[in-house]
Amino acid sequence: MTIHDTLPDTPALEIETGPNPQVTVIWMHGLGADGSDFAPIVPELNLPESPAVRFIFPHAPYRPVTCNGGYVMRAWYDIVSLAPGSREIDEPSLLESRDSIRQLIAREAARGVPSERIVLAGFSQGGAVAYLAGLTHPAPLAGIIALSTYIPSPALLLAEFTAPNGRIPVFAAHGTDDDVVSLELGEQALEVVRGIGVAPEWRTYAMPHSVCLDEIADIGTWLARIITEACRPAAAAP
Image (cartoon, rainbow, N blue to C red; front, side):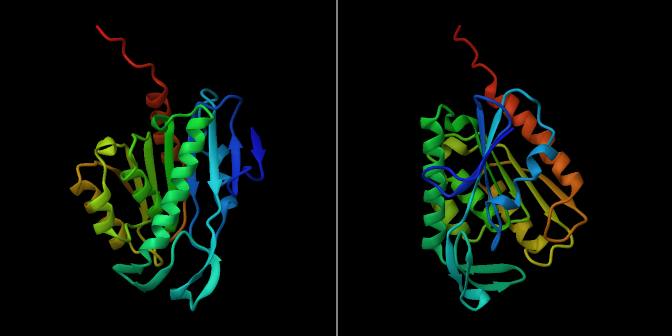
């Protein structure tokens, strides 16, 4: 396993499970964390040795977060106000983060990993970016992992949803005891995604706003299947 502290052109942590990665997972952290937050999860996924996978854990920019009294922290977008069943957010900063993820996807294509072999993953705020970036990407992606998250601007997602990812595989999971991003918000996101014809694999776990061992095992199983499907040779034309 190879670990790089940063990428040359984007602040991120990068981990490769072997030489010549054929698949990339771009994994976004939650509010106030950084790219190192989920790096330890890689060996716990128990993925097959081949094909090798490149995990990219980007760092969100520092910005004032209104709901936290304007405190400056790493955040994918500004959250204006919180309520148990809703969020008021700053859409321009959310779109800015989506653009940064699109740049990473383009960079991977230049490195030999096309979008069809790229999975977007995220926890909490990072999951909201994964939902938006994945479902509005102009080219097909391999999948989306959305953990303990929500869709902060359903109207924006619905307005920019693109057909290439109309059947994208999605693994969505939430804690039943989550007191930060309520299960209600996770279920609302599920309904929005189902409403555009995407059929997520939905799991709940008896946990707060975190991840648990059973969830990690389920992610690993799902991701191994997605990697196999993404790397399967295209059928020859008759």
